[in-house]
Image (cartoon, rainbow, N blue to C red; front, side, top):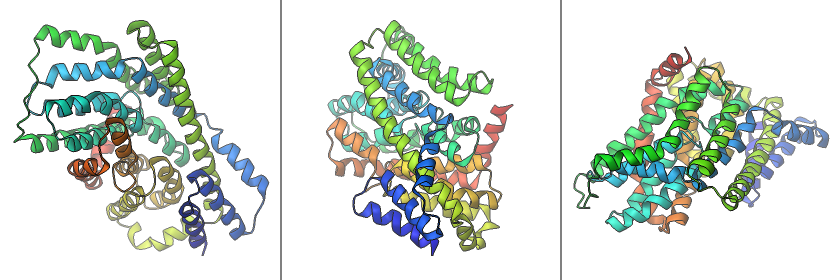
Length: 426
């Protein structure tokens, strides 16, 4: 009965058009009524406590870093460096998009910010060169969702905070899966481009290539700085977020000289608005998470899924399928906030490594960002590049299938996640 009240209150509030954060609060009130402890003070206290978390400080700073990258010219120079190195091969602009997506993912951790930058910079070039614009848009979207997987990742910060899992371990464990997602896009784009008649761009000279790499050099230092700094214990993930924001701002203002006061103001306002939405969602989710525990919903779920507890691989398949299905209707952050407190007790009961689960959980949530009918990253591509949604949906399917295959491979071979993490932690 408690599970029914949980689902009915949450889905019912969402069905009448209530914002996700308020739907979570309605769900919390319904659960309080169900377990007989209705008290507005408890609701308010948990709402305040939900946002009062040191690790969550990383969220606004990583969002700000992404905005400063775009406003300060770092994103454009990364694309320019990738263009100089590989833009001249068959389907070169597609490979440029993938390489740029991987590099930018290691700088901001925001799928929305990375996709917007990639689409704005590359889709006009691909349209002019004669590429299928729908397929190009699908590639931008699929490249953008690598951002929540490769560190620094806002998704890992949210999951780690709610689940009580080391964010540093999640960051280090996400490197290889993120690279595998990029490799899957490379292979898919190569297959789709075999018969392409689009004329490649002229091959640049080596001095031109070196100049482009040198221009992007300051931007390319940041991911190395963050990963090495966390591995050596110089700073925590939260401190890494501050380093990323300050570094992006200084490079954009003092080195590239593109970050003016007006652009800085726009970046601060945009990051503040997005941070406010995310933090309110987190606070509301913490109310529901506390009541989910009080109402023993995880224990009831464990009883329902008891037949799968003894087979961790089968259980992982089942949980990832649930996340993928939910991801077709819910956005990235709400899905993490709603499902994490529900699934984590099941993960621990089955003896699954919480870090391993967290990485696959975030990958599945990221795939939801390009899964119709919602697919917020698809909407970003459409609005930035002025591409019809139907064209982008048609173009994204090959890449969506490729990244889902990566998720399945990681379920079958967990060592692809846990092995590199243990090596990097030493």
